[in-house]
Image 1: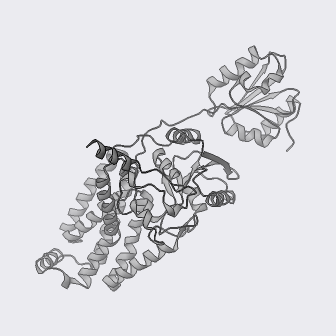
Image 2 (image 1 turned 90 degrees about the horizontal axis):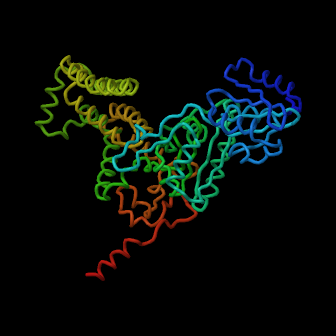
Length: 493
């Protein structure tokens, strides 16, 4: 395709050929004040129409004395650039900019007039907090970057922007702190993004599949968050954030398995309370993946470990159940998963009603019909509640799936099968990497210094260094501020 021509008629012909059957393409012919014939082009719905009228058309028609003044950005609008290729014209229009053609010029002017439909900034539904900021990302990358800059007004925050996709041409922004993030890590992520060859990337979840180390693994290898304060916290630890235009989720990497058990709420609560909740999550992790399997193993193979009275009670409960424990467990687990998905797809109040009422009715009806036992309903309910305690949705979903092969192993081998399953799971974790960083760290390999924010959450004034597992360039995070206050208090006393 030829470059932009000096002839207005030729440019208009090429424009209509490129944007054929495009009714939302707006072309406005007008006479500029210097006397030149001009054509302003933009896509209706993607531009800020008041900005087009007040800051572009009005100055060009009534105020501009010379065409040469267009090179001065302040003459018309805040951001002005020139382009000579039709590919740049096409991309500029699809991004909501306005393009000005002037008869006799072999180049065009691009004015920043992005507008269009936008969502109100509000707290994300999946990551609510009681004490933290009630702000969440939206689908506009510019606003998301602005939210991060609001939390982190620092000149070391750098942004690299790439275009991913041959048709959609999605804008992807890489954010990092230059004096903290490891250069090799940044280069590796940038290379992976450049190697993506696809039509279009719709959201952060799709992008994750293209750049993760182990696409066949159930375990998520990037954190996807909609909270700017969470993103800034990870940036300060030396990680890298990837913002995908038209997606409210931001990718954070590299991460470890234990990163998914940390939540922003932990750092706004008392450290003892936060440590208790952190330990509760790890207990919920083991319950989620192994409690139904343990029940199956005990009932099928190891019933002698139960107290006699409890064994009699379970026997009476299972007296009318014609199925083995594995069938009983699969029926209830699949029913719970169906109710969970139904609750997510239905509108808010109706979804909650279906989840609660449906679970109660199905559980009680199944017990009365003799399909499952009372103890199995209790086991499944505790397992479902435990999966909700995991703060990251992707990790919770993966753990819910892992309990099914654990149940099958328990059916065939009892407690030995559960131990084998846990060993396979641990081996898989320590063999994985997230952008070259060991997924099992700081436990495998062992980094004792990072354990201050793993199993429990130590006081913030005790965590003076950044996590070593991310290999940040600058390890120091803070000084011994609390020790200084203690000394002053001792002097006053």
